[in-house]
Length: 503
Image (tube, rainbow, N blue to C red; front, top):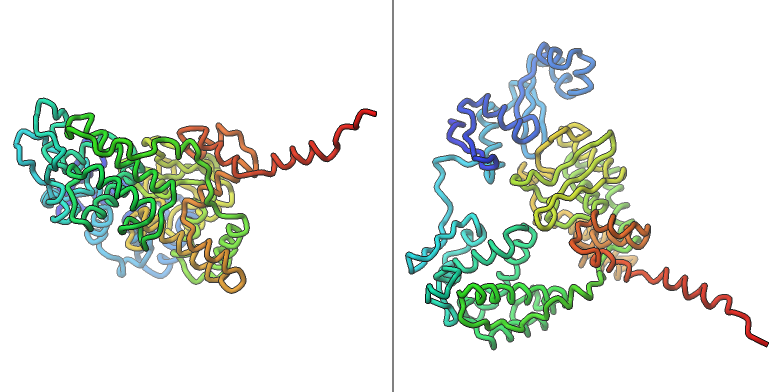
């Protein structure tokens, strides 16, 4: 292979990899922030570290191999650093090819064909919207793309009033997501999920496109959301009020944007959503009670003591510890090559800070407690990484089974697996708690983290707001509504010693 035919898309501007395999491996080591391929001899190891004592402390596995072999190779594979005798190691070309495949979202071959394009608008004067602005649309099946590449009865064909310049729903939907949700990957993901829900409902009734839905159809969709009918939710279970309120808000925002920009000559979704009343009355109700958190902690500690899994166990415990002790949102632990987040920094030994990309693409710093640091350190060592994060380290915080970064779906499955295992243990003694654990999600750990800050330890609200990444301090203060202990203490003090009556 010719590494020079590959491009690093994470740099600005994108740049070609060096033309030789050795130079490309060196480039990848610097770009990814970890060793990717190193051939060691005893002389080179001693020269690199200064003495065999230092080499033993830094690379004990390599030194052990060199005592019985002429050479040893350290190479990166499937999210961890491996050390094997040189005669058993894969060649540098193979390691390079595997790394480029693992990080295929970042490194792309010049000769690779471009991804599928958005359907062209019937009117050549309409705007050409690249699929990079809306990558999920490019991955949809052809029938979905054909369904979107139309304009319904409310679409405005007159270019003088259609300031959006879109000729069909596909272009108009892409521009909406770019302008209304493009600044935050979390918002974009939530908007896409709700629009997919609406599209599934339309497809089941052979309705559409979106610009063809009447007010009566949208009111029927609202009824389906509120009552869990028509396949809007798995199992046709009623949605929580906060969920269907958010779903209606996204739909209303879409049609309002289309109407304000002139793509539609009428707004059939006017008054569909209740607005901000749900957020004003926000009161968190879902979190892990202390007893259940302790049960999950105990199960993980027992699994650690078992010691049968050299990597998957430490990884699962690290995922749990980061959600448990950092209060992050689910997607904030998913690696992004664009932002280089999440990542760890060590200000001093044992004093780590987790940096994540919060809503609005803002970077948030979360100091990690010692209990979390100890668990993540074990996971790093199992991957062959240094115990302490290196300066400017840039590599996925959590790896997948195939070496790539573990994304939101994988992180979700790992936490749900812990809940399911603990629920199975509690099923015989406490079936009610087991049922609650099976319905729990990683976001419950964020609620528990917030409640620990605000209620249990009365951390000042501005500090708790900064740790949680809330846009409004009112959202942080809402956790205080869940605790009646302070109010109960005031009542007890007031009526325990009533004032004496006048004679």
